[in-house]
Length: 64
Image (cartoon, rainbow, N blue to C red):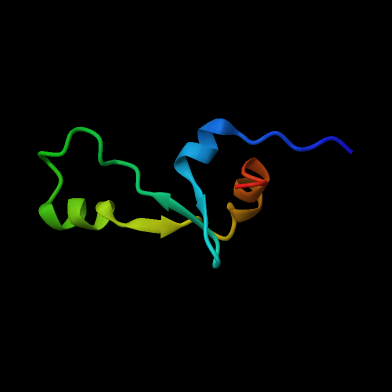
């Protein structure tokens, strides 16, 4: 069996941890003036990929 290729875009955005896959929040690049300080502060934090997306995320980064 050949090795699975890593999705390079996903490898730059996702990181495998002991409990799942870590990712960062969207909606924090521009149009920040209308968003509250609390909302922007919460978007700073990293999150774990949702369980429904975990299988596809792990398939994209098989060796990372």
